[in-house]
Image 1 (cartoon, one colour):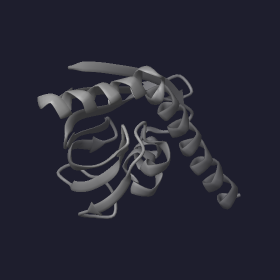
Image 2 (cartoon, one colour):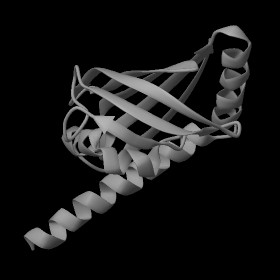
Image 3 (spheres, helix red, strand yellow):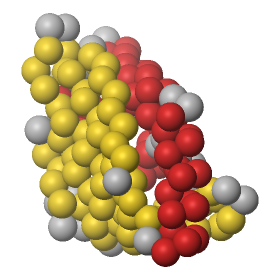
Image 4 (tube, rainbow, N blue to C red):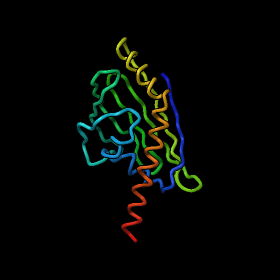
Length: 153
């Protein structure tokens, strides 16, 4: 099993970061591996919720079942199960000027096809997909908070 990590500081409160991490429409915009939400048992990801997502990887259309283990001001943890299994953790930590976001993604595949798809996923992550995702999360959070600030003024 291979694991990738990335870290950034976002100029916002942890709850504002969590809102972007758990909003299905926002997730589709920042996710390190492109996908669409097909089913979700609520308006956003919360601890215990489940979802079904799909996307293309290595030229194949794939589906994953998502199980959210943890979602609160300390972060988001979920597992995507499908042809490959992906463990995802976004830890939210106090930081000077906002919230530190520490992302960790582990990928594992079983059988020939699973291992092949795991390698394709690893190639995306090794190419910087997780670092780009963290940057998109920061932009989404900062855009949301600046919009709220402008509306309040």
